[in-house]
Image (cartoon, rainbow, N blue to C red; front, side, top):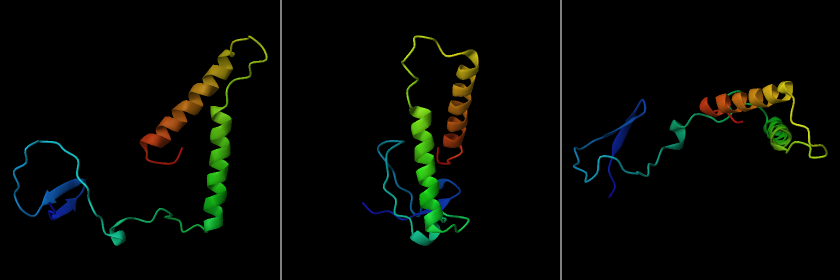
Length: 100
């Protein structure tokens, strides 16, 4: 079924009153391209975006690499604090909708 609706600050408002079987269900929504904000708000050149994505991928590889296994020592307190700080920053970026 195709139904018309308006988007209003995070809410979908149908143009007609419908009675649905369930109170919560999945919808497919077609959004006009001109209503979606630009993914590149600073209008950076494509080469800069590509380089930054490569840098982020490299940083992720470093962050996600396993600890060295050459010795049986546990990480120091300072190392543990740094690992927690990196994880906290990543979580904050995710919550803000920014790339990690």
